Length: 187
Image (tube, rainbow, N blue to C red; front, side):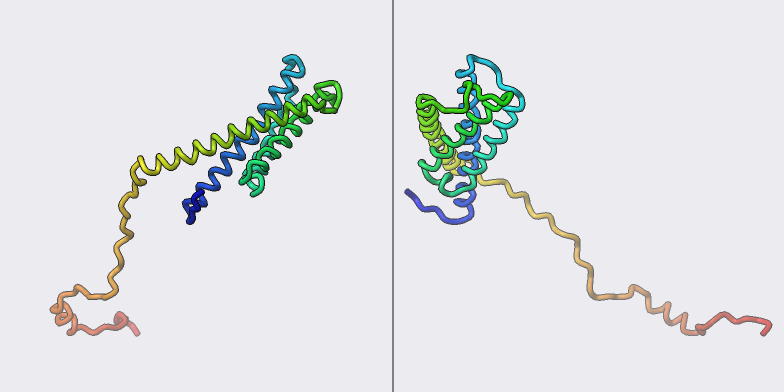
């Protein structure tokens, strides 16, 4: 196991956590839809059940990506998947206020199927994480560095010294005149 430090390692860890969370939420929802279709002989679920299932899957994904015990351990992932499938089981059975199996109980066979599916899904998710890490490592070495365009210079700074561009002979000719208010006749 290698220990990585720095912002790049933290960014990759958070990206892997998002991959794990997205996979856990979507797999929990997909297994729930598949189990519902299998148990109800292909009867499609209600739209309200699907909306509840999407919300439940999003919650499972966010929890897996956000909580360290679920994000970092295999047991945490499996337990989140089992809980996500049970939550999906309840939401898919919500149609018309009845459970899709005729009652709200989980049979031992159904509970075993959910646990086995959670274990297999955890293996698939950890494979996806490993593939993501390997792919990022390979791409970071194969692809060239990011293109950094040249810096665009800012505006030209103003001159701080002032120099009049007046020809000095104008001062000489103007010195014969007096300056003052105009002469008013009649006063």
